[in-house]
Image 1 (cartoon, rainbow, N blue to C red):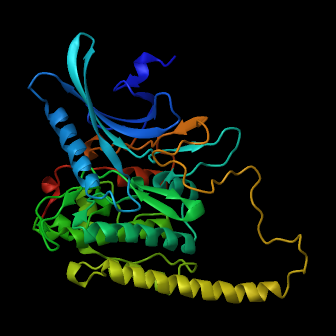
Image 2 (image 1 turned 90 degrees about the horizontal axis):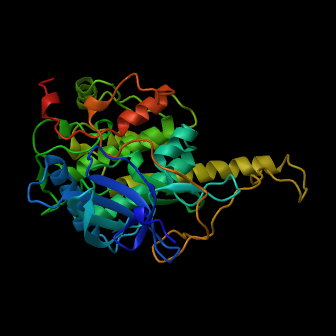
Length: 399
């Protein structure tokens, strides 16, 4: 018999809580449909039954309904989390009446270990992946980045902007170089392709210079900048512009003194992609179609180089069918197909679920430099990179 305390909406069993939120009324769960082996993610809002909604509850409602609205417009787009509607129920909790509202989503928002094996399952949060790897090989980074650009291109073609492109909102399936973009609660549907924005949303280290100017700016071009920050971090294991003080961070971004680290393993073609993105004037910034073209050129160049190296290598390697330049790691399970889609049951329950340690909605004021979770400079950078700020205006200055 299922534990009734863990049942929600009379149809889902809560498996675990996922990312935390600063909004006390908003929770994020991995759930299983009762009587089946099908999994979903729920973004669940708990509201007082009376008509007096708190600021916290109003914020939660805005996030839930924004994501529902945006994802309903993206049902035909590959590479994004999909929604399956909103469910509601009235519930009495400790003698008080509440309304429970949940947005039902694909169960992509976690990673897990397969039973009795050390291999990862299908999707891993890019935040965790890059923290463990520190940097990615150039070819892998470009493959991943190309997938992400293709997803963003689909959004922009529909006049939709994500508004919070960052590592923590990307899920990655390395086996097939698949990328899933999640968390559309800050997204916006534009009325026209050139509509300008007047507000600032997102995570500070990914913000563009024009979004910090206090003036209207183009949301699509601003997101190109965010893509550049992601690629830079994948390649170099650090953010291109970084400071723990928001005002100093924003000053660095606005002054755009872009100098890539000296890393011989990163090709000139790839560096040029970054240079085309990190332009202070958004009109001079590369368009997504240009970036995709340049990625293809960079990958072709890498393939040519690898082909030459392989030819040179084969001339010195013994002709032995048992000889292999690389071996698969024993014990790794690599799924052949994407099995975590809604409607497709997982092969087995996860033995242990690892959830994101970084809140998906935080304020700079809550960041404590002495927090014990900090273990190294890069982890600290990534934590700061996940921070969201609702009101940027107090950080604007004339510099």
